[in-house]
Image 1 (cartoon, rainbow, N blue to C red):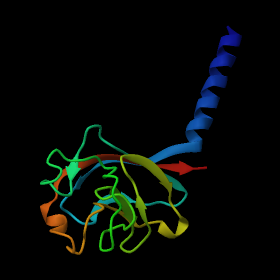
Image 2: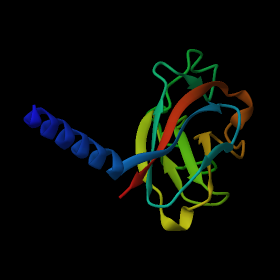
Image 3: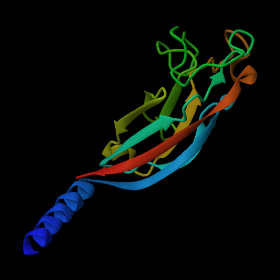
Image 4: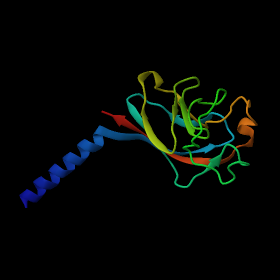
Length: 158
């Protein structure tokens, strides 16, 4: 009987140690609308955390419903965005994030993670589609359709 208790205590200690190494600060679901440039979320970046995300399976949006009436994923299409887009050189239609009003931008796609830097602590997270923000090549965000549901969490790093 004592051996079972020792094994149980050891298992609980090991599990709590692993959980303590990465503990969720906050997890939430965010809806990102295709026709909104830089949509502010309720997520506040906290230093020494990893921000993780995953777009709901089969979620689609479209930067041009005439060309892509069925939509495309948050990974965008395999065509690099030009000057005047949110993130030139990255796939058109890709989900993109930014920390703070004028902070670091990063490609997101349908899933991934980034480390939050100390200088980003306390900044809000913004999300958008990689599209023509200036309207140089068409209607920009005005003709976009759809939305992505994104599950996000921050894990504290120890």
